[in-house]
Image 1 (cartoon, rainbow, N blue to C red):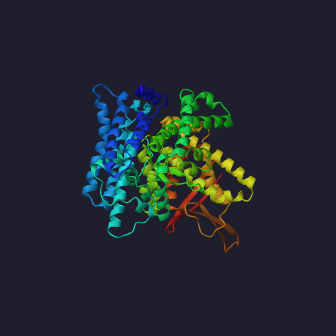
Image 2: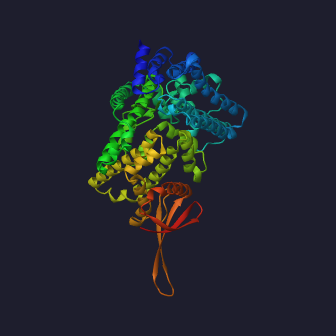
Image 3: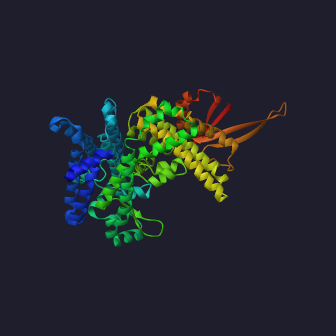
Length: 548
């Protein structure tokens, strides 16, 4: 009876069954197998057995006779994990870190490409690519952490304190290795956690997540409060119920198809904005709901502690995949994206951005993130467009925001306008992830006259002229304009020359974005008449003339 109710709830809200079952298993794990020295092996084994079991139940409704497809789907996880484990045994850590990232991303890409051939796969709320995406993060991070451990063993220092805290000096045995990969609390939808965080949960060593002696002492004194997580459980349970109700309400009422209909096309621009915002909010509830279930399962298990609140209350805080409040009310795209799929952001930052050569770090993050998500062409249009928005957002914050911060009311007005603009931009682009079709995405963008592309492009090139930088040195990662007056010796006439400075990676992303959106600028708002790139060491100067 209980299993039937759980399956019904899972079907209604369209989230993996294992995340619902994880409530019960998490309570049993914390109650009957608390972290003690003699229960460590049992806790690892429990994670493996329950992880495989709930995954089996999760896929049961999608398979044919003899359950062959269930076994085949779950075996894909082992087919990715075992060669990776062998790579970490055979190869030196400094080579294994990149070999593992390459192999796991290649394996995941193969599954993504296979999935493109199956139309019905797009409609499934439960798909093996989701666990493989989480496992790819875990395996690659494990290889990088082993390399950090090897560096520390040799007596050398690592570049960042976070790398030192997560360093692993020895390759885990198979039981803890698979316990980490199949951890039932987050194996399906995340959030991603590092191996050391999993191990501290299993062994009850939460204080080892910190290096500061005062933090370690504080954690040691408050372990019971940390594992009970009563306040966090109440908040997360309320959020979960809220998202479930919204998901059930919106499930049959709000679909992205309306946004590409002829009826929608006939609406005025402000009504279009209203409906896009409303549809975006309701369509996101499915993700909020799934991640809330995962967060609840972790809290019930006593898993995911990340530190104490910085507001002076010393209230424990826990890992989560989403901060819905900051996403929906953020004043710029960076704040919003930083609070969306937070575990993936951590993985990209600590395993890609901080490991890649500095000048290629942003490009590396872009490509790894794009390949990790899959190969629907619309994904790449959305990612390239998001790169354009990020560049424009940084420029606005550097040049436009200082004009409004002196007055409280002006600052409030700036925050409201930028929130509405950022929310429009992300809803405008994010619909591509729901439509999964490039032509439909372009049709939706066309319904908004491509404003989500044209306005950022115009601001990117025109704002530096309207509000030149007051500093002599260019800000890293921000478009900067400099002026130079040249006198003609013959006529005595003065000619003003303008130049922009951007780091190399922003130039690369800009060229991608410009090439992508040339077709959108068909009515000739902007005509570039000359463009010259001049290498100046760390970046390039972009010299160009344009007419409007």
